[in-house]
Amino acid sequence: MKSRNFIIGAGFTGLTTGIDDDLTLVFEKENFPGGLCASYYIDLSGRKYPGRLSKETFRFERGGGHWIWASARDSQYIEFLKQFSELKFYERKAAVYFRKWDLIVPYPLQFNLNLLPGELKEKIKKDMRNVGETQANSLKEWLYNNFGETLCEIFFFPFNEKYTAGLLDKISLKDEYKTPIIKERIIESLERPSYGQEFGYNPKFFYPVNGLDALIAKMALRANISYEKEVVQIDTKRKEIIFSDGDGFKFDKLISTLPLKTLMQFSGMSDESDFLLHNSLLVLNIGAIRGRMKIDYHWLYIPESKSGFHRIGFYSNVDREFLPESLANDENIISLYVEKAYPMNSKLKQDDLKKSVKDIVEELKEWQIIEKELIVDFTWVPIAYCWESTETPQNYKEIIRNKYKSFGIFSTGRYGKWETQGVIDSIKDGFLAKGWIENG
Ligand SMILES: Cc1cc2nc3c(=O)[nH]c(=O)nc-3n(C[C@H](O)[C@H](O)[C@H](O)COP(=O)(O)OP(=O)(O)OC[C@H]3O[C@@H](n4cnc5c(N)ncnc54)[C@H](O)[C@@H]3O)c2cc1C
Image 1: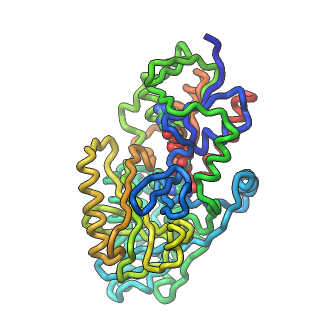
Image 2: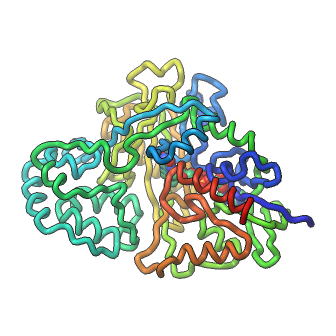
Image 3: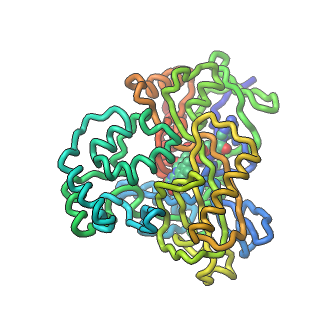
């Protein structure tokens, strides 16, 4: 059998790697490209479409709203994407919602503390005298050392416990990007808001005018993709990929965008000490009649909810294009996504997921965010956010990835590198992988 170069996965990383390369074949287990970023459409009768085949459809994304953030340094990647679609730019509107006080505080919370109840502000002021210890082993310690007891108690601990599905004291992440710290600004914001629009996660973002699906479809046309080809095993000695249908292909060079942990499982290596940690995610997509609560934020972080969700995003607050055309001007119609995290290796039955979905929808109604659901759909993401354990030996991931390189396998992309990163970084990874195929 003649060997050649292959890519596993037609998400953003695999598509970028495979673009305009007739000699390299991409294997994708689904029958569509885009991975987590693939948008899909549902009409009011519940019928699903892979693209906007009817104007009377809600647009959703498999992994929930995918807003592409980029800095000025990323202009070449933005230009790359502009070949496939016109892009529309937005400024982030995010906030924290405290249900118990029915209070919305703009994100980053720590720069808008004057909006909190008075007695808490006094406590935070005292806490701030003792914070600033930089040494921290876990995310939990890091949060406590930088924000003190009160802010951790009301937000950082409960939110992150839910988001990491219980891994808060086990992961080594220091999260200064999503959780910016400027002590003076935090203290100052106890007196007056500073809003902090320029700080933190995703301050500006863009989105393709006709949906991510349209952009991805155009990218996919320029790559050589074999759909419904699920890799189940990789023989590193024989340099062979084995598929669920029994096929096998020998490779010269292989780009894998599989999660690093999965690549290890498929090739007989194991992360037996569980240094590579992650959560799993239930993503709900909902089209609904709005409740009494009128929210104009793009997304809300939720520290406490009975049904366990930690974030609600509003597609229709980013753009009314996400709604069916005839409802786009009806301010009573909204579309949203809700994230609920589960511990890694959770094996949920379909009925368990449906029960969670029902509970979340009920809670959204109780909170008056929605009055009535029109469409409810959900996706299960087995590996969603990736972290390393506090026990992880130094350079653990690099050592493993280098070992794979010695077998002719380049493990890359958000999951192949086991990093929490966005689409632009996956595109960068795709270009690097392309270079590796060409030059080694
Ligand atoms: C909940 C959530 C929200 C996010 N929001 C944002 C956001 O707002 N903005 C942003 O920029 N980024 C966001 N991201 C990150 C973004 O999803 C990733 O950066 C991006 O999808 C990574 O692309 P990828 O190609 O590396 O991986 P993936 O999108 O995971 O693509 C991997 C591909 O491999 C295929 N595959 C898997 N297993 C096999 C197999 N065995 N055989 C063959 N094919 C296989 C999959 O079907 C998939 O198509 C978010 C991520 C999550 C989890």
